[in-house]
Image: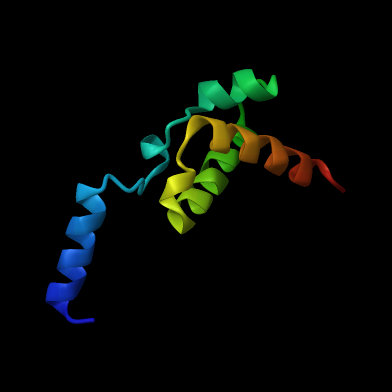
Length: 81
């Protein structure tokens, strides 16, 4: 696409408040620690980044319920040897 199309696409994403960073997710590290009964640490940060990846694929996933369920699934996946 041309520059104008890219600008329009970027503006549409901003207008729609598409999450573009971990801070834009509806859950926080504190939410994950509570839901997963985990202490602070790098694992929480990794989970947040993985959740952001999922939300970037489909912004409709940026709901508390969906992200906490996905975090639980990812935690189990990461725990496998």
